[in-house]
Length: 195
Image 1 (tube, rainbow, N blue to C red):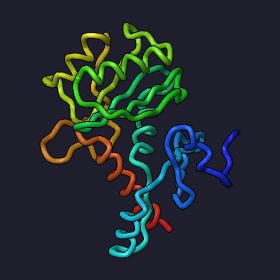
Image 2: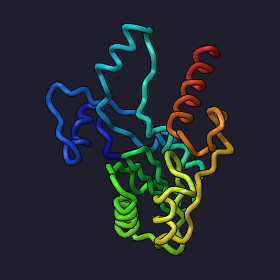
Image 3: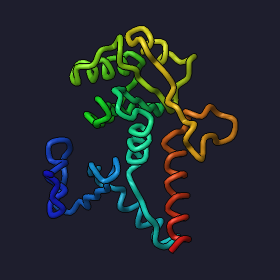
Image 4: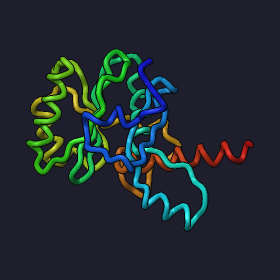
C-alpha cells in the first residue's frame, strides 16, 4: 500500500547513497505483492542493448526470492545463497517475506555472525527454524560446518521444481541464481512466442 511509482529512490535512501542521475528500477515479485527496488548496471545493460537489441532484465534476487517463497509455502524459514564473497539472506515467517539482505563476508565466522544476527532480529529459533542453503557451499565446506554448529536444521534448498536443475555435473543447489535466471529467461521467451 505504501508503494509510489513516482519516487522509487525513496525506498533506497536509507540503505545506500543515490545520486540525482541514478536510474532506479523496480519489479514486482511474490505474485505482485512486493516491489524489488534497485539500481541496475546501466552501462552493462546499454552495451547488451547495442550489441543484441531489446531484452528484459531483472534483479538476480527477484527469481530467487520467488523460488524461496514457493519452497517455504506458509511456513517459516531462512534462505542463504553464497558466492565466494557474498551472502544473500531471505527470511519468511508464516509464508510472509520478512527480510531480504546481502552481506559481504570473508570467513565462515562472518557468515555465522550475519546469520545469527538475522535470526535474532527476526525473533527466530535456531532450534526450530531451518536454514536452506544454496550456491557456493557444500557439506564439506567450513561454512556448512559452522552453520550446523549453531543451527539445528541446515538443509540444501529444494530444486526439484526447477526446469533447469543442473549445469553440467554440479549439485542442483550450486549456481542457483544463474539457473533461476535462465529459467526466467526461458519463461520470457515462451511468452514472446505465444504472442
